[in-house]
Image (cartoon, rainbow, N blue to C red):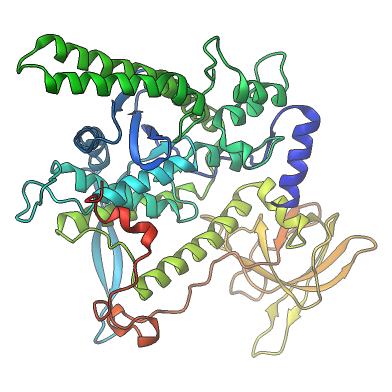
Length: 541
């Protein structure tokens, strides 16, 4: 936790209301997000219980497993879920953009222009909290390898055709959610936590109702009072007025309501099996007990459903950050690539990555993390304030400029000296390179800002002045282009970190994986953790 976040949490405790951590929205929000609220059976992490989903806040759709331990009911639930989700996930592939890029010829090394197809938009799933992301990942892991009735070796328990396809999509979304800055699959608690600091711990922020209570408390209540009410208030039956966001249910709800209802449903199914064929009364009893379970679960899920949409409304009050389109384009490429792999008939994602693939994923996530932190600092003064508090940046007002030149080369180069007065305390050692973050214009006068480098000449903590020598971003002429040198009275900000993310070192091709990392794929089976065996098959159920 950064110093600024700690201060914001302390201020939230003092004021009784959550404090902003951002002035702009740092994650993409779709115009038509798919909200998914999953629920699992207590003690059975891999047994889905219900899911409420939809793109219309006033018309959620509910899918329920009346008996989570019944294989047939689970597969029927997954088939219904696939029929609901897949049209949304696949519906963004019709609108295509042609993007021109270059590819390097592996033989000659020459670059040739090529046209690539990119989906103009992509789907977005929003779940209540991190547990919801984990649950969707489990569903994807346990279904993408399932055999269907169309397979030659279907086995004794084939699943509907759409179920493995849904598993592949959920697996892709789960993996993409681990890339910093990605917005294909988001947890509402993480979204709100990035933009507001509450007066409670990060663990307590995983309760969506309590987190929203701090951000928008009811009239007459402080954030702490509203959060306590959201976490503990119960009705006359002893049930929570604000059920947890899941995916687990409240133990008292399981004991008093859900457990007895499932028992009655099991008894009705047993009576139907013992009754003569076509017994209408027994069939009605099974349907009524199943509807009882459905009604109970709908009552538990609906408050969380409304809270997710409340969070979306709060986030939409913030203007989008400048770098959001760039990160969303990366998500669109990821979505497009997965569609192409499905269309090409490639096999499902493997259970375990080979060494090169794992290293590439790790390098990508490290690179994206650095990029997100950099872009957020450039987009948001509050994010930049964290860098300034850490001594990695400083902002101030220009008080003096002095022309100077580098005469060591064939022709003199402009190297003006700029004196900045700041209240910050940067790690400004003489000779250290800094980068201008605010107010760096292009020398040609058009487009967005160009990176401008400078070198620290002197820093005087007594009067808070930093003397800088500009070394780039002033054009190619003997005199700096107009507007490229900050003038007295101008507000500027310089960072002690680069404004571009460096690429990681290249990795070998998978077939060239050294033997120290398992050898080429397929030469040796990777050891399989026993804890993951449940995802391979369900024959032991």
